[in-house]
Each structure stands twice: as structure tokens, then as C-alpha cells.
Length: 342
Image 1 (tube, rainbow, N blue to C red):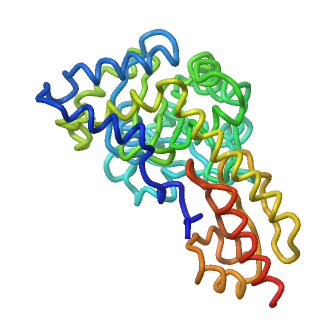
Image 2 (tube, rainbow, N blue to C red):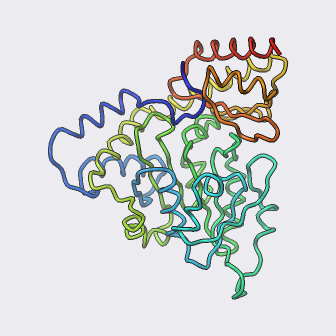
């Protein structure tokens, strides 16, 4: 059975796996001084326009840490949603390793707004308070919701008005671009984002993310911070080769569009069932639903998935680049059978 627990559960797309094999043909320079890393960097720069600084790292937590550690000092604070990955699922790494304080905000849909952020923008210049320096958002959010380009621009403008930065956690960035139908440049570079964590592991890559700095002054210490955070790969070409294949002929968008489509297909089937309610309109490749606890436990004997909010019996189901309609049909049939038996 295919898992709907996470898009991390899927394997590697064949074209990306082939790129890793191709990069293994001979010796090459280490630590990013190889031709593959140069090509992948240029491909990312072309995607966003201009010549942003690109740093490849091993994983999403490492990408977020590199971004935040480079943008902040130990007395700074990062404003984020209470559901943000940096706040909930990184084991305190931003506080422990980046050394910054997180100012979490409760939101109804996982999205920050200028009005919500302003409630944390005080105490500037007051030596007893951590100084807000970064607004960090996830695109898509951990609840599967999306920011429009206009919403991102409003947050970037607010950050810059206060001599702050805007960081975007894009672990599922491809799903956001595919869903909104706009270019990465229009969503990120043109809206004033300062740093993007660009992920691929959840969308067909084996390992790796790219941290992209759009203002040169933001990246001055990035190479040293990456080394200290143990995110500098010696054989970096094997991460870069994946990005090169990932971006070629818009493979990354095709894979993300498919997983988004599968989530919508699953949602259409779930809406026909009694006893289960979708809590958010799916905008990317994730679904959240409330159902009886007994049904959750019985369904979990057949399919693995995570609880999202145990108190309200809310669960999360994720679709992947290799999810099929047949996978979903079998899942819906199992869910229908379990619900019909009370």
C-alpha cells in the first residue's frame, strides 16, 4: 500500500536518480567547486532572475537554520506562525543553533498577515527585549494554505520598513508555484523576499535543499555559517546534480502539479463520505480532516498517516509525486468501509 503519511515517504524520481549516477562517473572537485554545482547554481539563478547567492545544504532544517543564522544575531527574534516548521518540528534547532528567539503567532490558517505581525514589532532599541529581525513564513504553510504574491509583498514591505528580513520556508515550494500558476521570480524575487529555502526532497529528490539569498548583504557570512552548521557537503555535486535534473524541462513543476492534482482528487472522494470532514480547502498536496477516533485507529491499521490535532481528531494525509488515482480509490474505499461500520 502507498503511504499518505508524508511526501517524504516516496522514493526518488528516475530522472533524478539517473542524474546522481551520471555525476558518479569520475573524480571532481569537492565542496561545490565542481562543474555540476556551477551549472545547478546558474539554473536556479535563471529561474529567479539576476544572480542571487545559492548555497546547497542537506535538508530542510539545515536550510532554515542557515537562513536564520545568517540573518540574525543572538539577541534577535524571528516572527513566525505558531504552526511553522521552525517552531514545531525542528526540535528547538533555531533557538539552540541559530541562537535566536522565536515569536510565535496563532493564526486561523497558518498564514501571517501584517496585522498579526505588528503585534510582535515592539521594543526596538530597548536593551531588555529581543530585537525582531526576521519574519519567517512557509509557502505552502504547514496547513496546506498558500500566500498570494501580494500577501508576500505586504510582509516583505513590513519587514523592510522595520529594518528586518523576510524568509520563506519553501520545503514544498514547487507545490506552491504549481498551484498558483505564477513564476518563481514573480512570487519571490519580485515581491522582496530576502531568503528562500528551496526544497526538493518532498517532490522526487533524494536529499538536499538550496538556500537562496536575494540581497548580497544577507549572504556575507553564509559560507561560514554553512560550515559551522555542518551543512557543507564535500561531494556537493550529488546534491547539485539532483537540482539540475529537477529543474530541467520543468520536471519539478510537473511532479508538484501531479501531487496537487491527486490531493484535489482525494478531496472530491472524501467529500462524498459521511463521518469525515475536511478542515481546510486543499490548495497544495495536503489534506486535513476530522473523523471519529475509532475510525482513525482502524484506518491506520491499513494505511499509515499522522495525527495533526489529537484533541479534535484531526489527521493529515499527503499526496506525493508518484501517487496514483488507483492508490486514492483504494484509500477512499477503505475509508468508506470503515466509516459505514461505525
